[in-house]
Length: 107
Image (cartoon, rainbow, N blue to C red; front, side):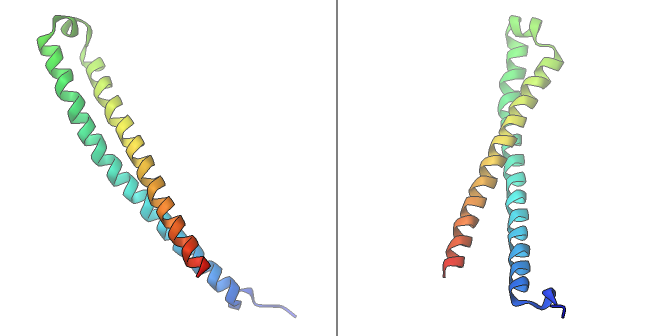
């Protein structure tokens, strides 16, 4: 006698719960990407202005910071900002969803 697992109420609720959690995870990661991209743009601009200004005004920077070094300074600041903000955003959203999910399960 075979039991049809797909028709089991426990299995249907588990699958719906899994799909719901998967959708929440995708939403969390998308929020992280958007927030990280915004932070990377701001950090790139904020680091590009003083870097380019110092190369034009300071003799030491003009002699020692070639275009590759300037690009490395700017891209490092932008990359760090992206990963830090994206990570914090994803963790905050996951924490919020985890608290909401656990309170829904206890009710």
